[in-house]
Length: 364
Image (cartoon, rainbow, N blue to C red; front, side, top):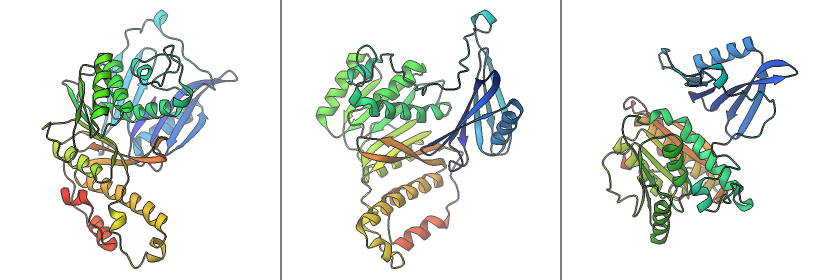
């Protein structure tokens, strides 16, 4: 069972539950995800049931349940309305049921498995042809799986009856673009069309050649600048991973104006506010350059998240590990809600206090 759609990511971003057998006693192991921390606790039947009821009443809006004979989804609206959908599995006959793994200790279950070769991972040098992870690429392998977990969490927000239109701004070498295509199209069977955009011509040529080689027919790469991109009038999901400085703002603006259902952005090089911030009250702190730089980056992303919330998005800021750039990065994950929200004075108060003019605020 996976509980997601948190209303308080500080308390918990996600909870997974599975049965375990410990000294001949059937228990239920709860795995709670909070930032980069993971907590494992075992509970008996009745205590676990009480915890699940409490979680769904106050913290999570969705539960995905998977058993040998049944798949079910439980949804809780903001007004407390509960909707449950059930689907019987074809392998419901007892003799066809897979055996449950009740081992207490088991290795991390990645979406992409070690030992099972995946075409794009082999082509990009992350895996050897027999499925082993290249020693120098293990961090990249973990990063790819972490990214796919973020997408897995919002899978139900993407359209099911038509082609899903996705744009990846600043795609670079496109490890994660290929991973997203493979997961959504090959593993989930979704009808998708993905465009990657980057400034570097040689990178675009290489990625298009690889997509053609792999037979990823609906994955295409174009050379261009995010701010000037005019290639679509309707996009369901906008991805922007490490678009530098204001390029992230242009990507977010386009996502909002397209009415994208999902936005995944990992900003970097947030220089804009660092050059603007002026505040006499905070001067004893801001006089240290490295502190000012880090504060400016965090404030930039917090304001971006707040501005997306004003535009009607349910927004989270999550930690996303990426060893190629910095040890830790933040991901802004925004899912479209039901309409615009009242403009609050809080953002204006912050920008006036710090004497800054965020470009995303101006664009929107």
